[in-house]
Image (tube, rainbow over all chains, first blue to last red; front, side, top):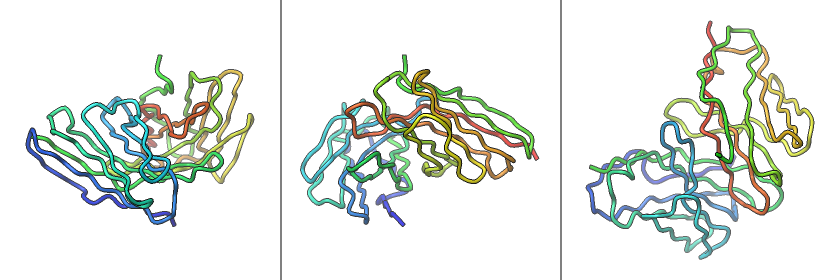
Length: 113
Length: 111
């Protein structure tokens, strides 16, 4: 079974803090993704990576950055957390070949106060 | 226009009935289509994927794809209360690697 593990299930951070969300997958997938999910808006893509050190912006990258130093690990960084970044963050991974489905981690519910 | 559109629901069906969930997409070059199920407080899990026009069946689930009309549907036969969840339609657009999701349809199966 594919396993995608996010480092925290719940996080509470203060406005202005630098926040790191970590994600690890164990299936040697090339692609990794960060989405955020908000009521009524569905899942929106923040960033994705298709190889080590390679990244592309998604639909809502403002206020976020990412790091992928190893194939299995993909980090999402909130440079200066703001209250409008309070959300559920979901990491996913997929193979690069064919039309591969994405497998999701358990999610991190981030609250910025 | 949203890239992937779904009716937010809730769609309420009695136990044992057929639930029909629909999704339309805007990118005519889209190649692959997915249905995910998400229980409250949980992450999405894949139910089915479909790439070719027509129907694809897996147990109680049937995915239907019509590329000419740009819609995808999911039929759930013999609906059970355990099927109550939000169903997310997702599409990989032409030349893209990431899934684009609809906002989901909430299904309620009444015992």
